[in-house]
Image 1 (cartoon, rainbow, N blue to C red):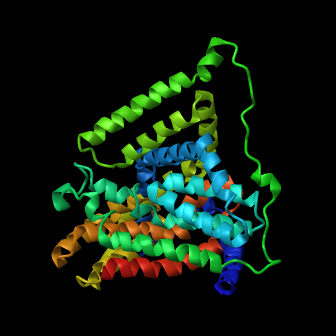
Image 2: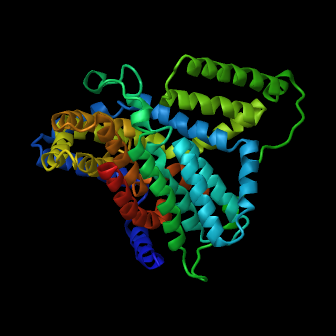
Image 3: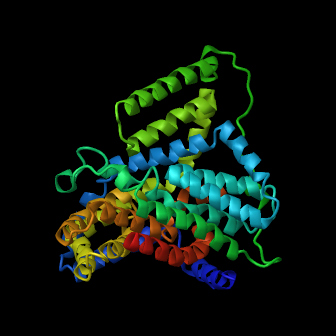
Length: 435
């Protein structure tokens, strides 16, 4: 059973993996040293690159926070919560608990990464109230579904290149989602992960008596205190009419947008989830309470994203990005370029855990290589996307929201996710190369 492999990995990670903030600080120092030692940059030049780039991802960071917050508000709306509770009733044993969490997380993450992270955590907590199961593995199962996000409807790279006016339009044109998200090779990868990820989670289950059960205090949900609206201000805060009017306006815009052949972009995904959340919560007061909870889950993003932006600036401007990517381009053939692009992106993602940031760094190297070797630009673009998604399994940055909701530490789940990294990497590599 895979549990015998997972257990030493869990112990190893528990001993050596620091808090995600410490992790990004160490990565920053490694990149700075590499820029000096490998690229021959002066220490002062590297510091200048780092400081100048510190705030370069603010716009993208805001988009990512909106994905997380809108996903949280959507997932925590009463109708969605009731659905999760009913689904949780289907879990009659630890086996069905692990399988249910895995499939719900995979499906939700394919729809929207923020939605997947949040709904996976909330569903894991709902099941933990009903079934005695190893809580670490349950939450790790919820996070493992995140692997499919960049091959799904909210993948930032496929949505970016499907948007007219994107940075590389002059080189590759506008590539529709029929060539990326809904292409055969991508659907094969997603289908393979839907089979393997739940199975691996199941095979990592600890033996009876070895489970780490949840502290009941972690499962308590914040409740909005009941009140009777008396003042005009309180009545407006409890007005379902206001929510319905503004929510319907948003959905009307989306209807007209898609009616006029609008494409599915990151901003449109955020818009959709925000206005659905407004309608599903009913009262504005409930929506705002959910918003406050959602922002807490993203607190780590606020301080860490600028540090990763600084890392990205050093990697890009020092020449490290081109050096790393060129090493893989040099050994690639037309058949193997997507695979080596994927591996390269997985490595770079440790230092730049942002699909948009990684695209900005690696596209200038791999897109010309794809053109020179006669390789489909859409496939190479998705290889970068999958590399970014792949090593997120052991890059604690994106686990912050789900850990905040679940009440766990990164080291509690990353040992399980390390095994996923090895197995899912093989599936993605095969899909990119042979389909």
